[in-house]
Length: 115
Image (cartoon, rainbow, N blue to C red; front, side, top):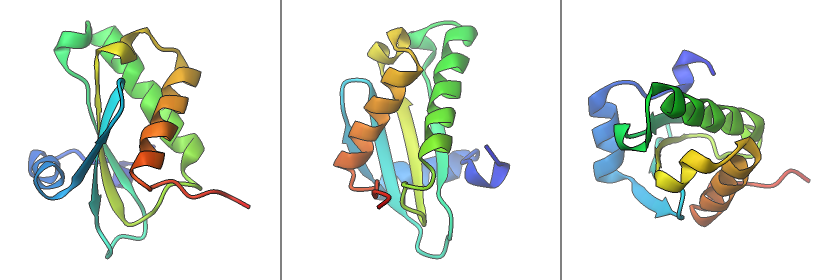
């Protein structure tokens, strides 16, 4: 995933947390903030140390990034997304992570369908 598509700075995360809307399911919490001047979307990931060691956390992050990469044509542009992984995400494989993210993005009305 390209660097311009990522949220890295703490103040950018805090802006999304403060001004964005949150949507959740059992595995993920997604904060969405409209950025109308952007013609692309950006994602920030938060995986707590409580979920496991670095190997486990990095695997969850890779799964989330890959799911967003595969869904990028359907995800609304002009928005910032911060995804927080919850404990049940540890035991999921890629297909389950992707379907869970699709579910929570549908709840956020951030997924459009290709015709």
